[in-house]
Length: 80
Image (cartoon, rainbow, N blue to C red; front, side, top):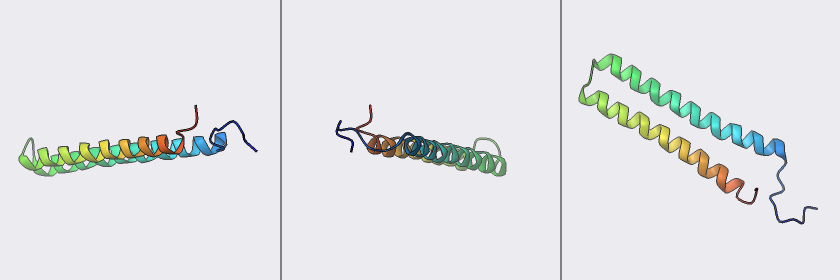
């Protein structure tokens, strides 16, 4: 029994959750960049559609990273 007040998760569970969060963030980054590139290629140089796609892609990336970060912080808030 763990009596020191820390989270009782094992190191491997922590690593797995951290890698999962990173994978979500990296996957969203790649998806956002692909969206930007695909729409950029199909619409030409800098058009309103390209600006919207870029904004949407970056918003998705930031949202995914922050969600993964917050989830990891919430899960490991008792771990030093």
